Image (tube, rainbow, N blue to C red; front, side, top):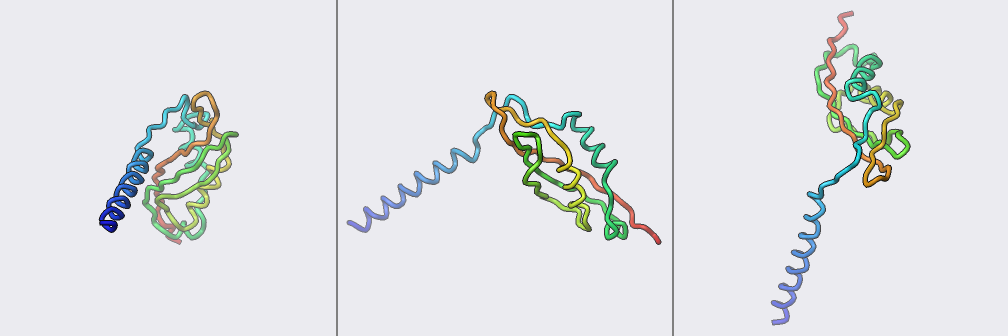
Length: 132
């Protein structure tokens, strides 16, 4: 009887814990203003494409990939915690990160307070290999 009671007690405890965890997975976040590039999203794409320098290793490759990158816009508008979910390789990702880090963004405002929040961008990168 003690064993059955212990098993039931452990089962209920784990069930209560799992329900608590589920509550926070689907929590909706409402903001007054999402983080943004001051000149707009298209201007950010233009800035990256106009300033992206392909490293020598990349120039020798034909590249056709959609890079997925996320970063935190900190409370002062600077960039932190850049992460690539899908990479291009050949040093291109590092060049994209430098360009993103060089910019200032409008930080997120939530409930009247400036807070850090993550932004994400899918960036198509295409280049034909040099034929030298």
